[in-house]
Figure 1 (tube, rainbow, N blue to C red):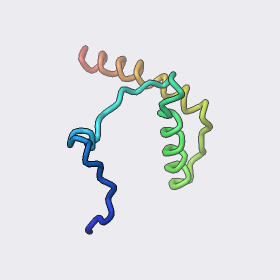
Figure 2 (figure 1 turned 90 degrees about the vertical axis):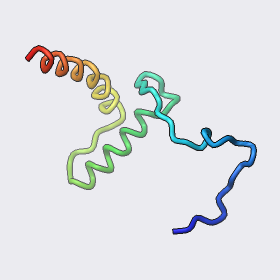
Figure 3 (figure 1 turned 180 degrees about the horizontal axis):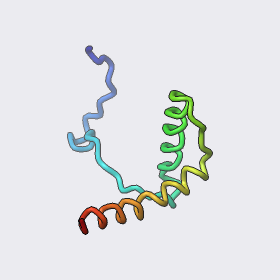
Amino acid sequence: MILKNLPLNKDKKFDEYLVKSEEFEKDDDKNFHIDFMSSMGNCRAMNYKLDEMDWLQVKLKAGRIVPALATTTACVAGL
């Protein structure tokens, strides 16, 4: 597939076009991390005929991921 009419800015450097990781922050609503997770999760829920979740439920569940991951890692390391 050939991409035509790509808007290339000649002033941009190559590394500005690269995909970069971003730190996840659930409490900052201006970065739309929870919005993205909510929309993608609901797309998956519709696809597999699961119950959809509202925005607040997604935000609460996202807040529990890091402590659960730390607990799991500590248990595995202890074994």
